[in-house]
Image (cartoon, rainbow, N blue to C red; front, side, top):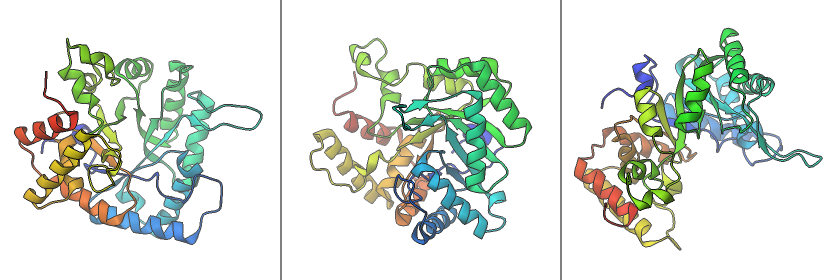
Length: 324
């Protein structure tokens, strides 16, 4: 398997990232419990055993509790921080009292304040990657650039990236920043395959229905920006979740994935991730499971090789109709 973009930058990160959104209990401000910390220890240990050394957070996950329980793991394991890569995200704000709505916030003050909160909850002096979580329509690129410059100069963030952005949005930010944006995290899976359809549907009427931003995959490839896939396992529908109410193409795809897994002596999860990683952009899946057996099953993906014909069979089955 050829090097992927972050490896091209001499960063020894794992090909698979563990997403930590499921850690920390419920989405509320209830206190962290011992069971939550125990779960975090088990999840991190399973990831390390699977050679996963990169962990994905966001300041909003479980109202900050995901980072706090992860911080408890770091506190209990001296030396672990130096062995792993941590990324977190900021920019999403929840509704507040007085009728203040949920909103996005890329103001300099909020970005800097968010990072300080992330560091405090994790109990670390720096994070490796900070991603801007969702595009803020009121974003001032000069203000963002100033915040990132200050964070980097203070040693609080090593690298920067974005999430859920198109090529033009990244290019605008990059035009004002001296620090490269090295990651873009987007929803991608065998069921969420708009990133493939965009190219296939050039000059086709079907392109009108595709929400994936045209030209973004090509831009990231040209700029050597790491593509990260969130929800790469398609919410479990192709690897064991009940298919009640699902359309025929999802049922057929789940059956095919299982057949391929059995033929290759691997897991359904491994086949799904291998399908993504077969793409020439060097996609880095961010798995969000807290099931330790499923984490280990995902780790098998690095040993799965899909031929061109197998890759296309999965894709065409998932789209539910022949290619144009």
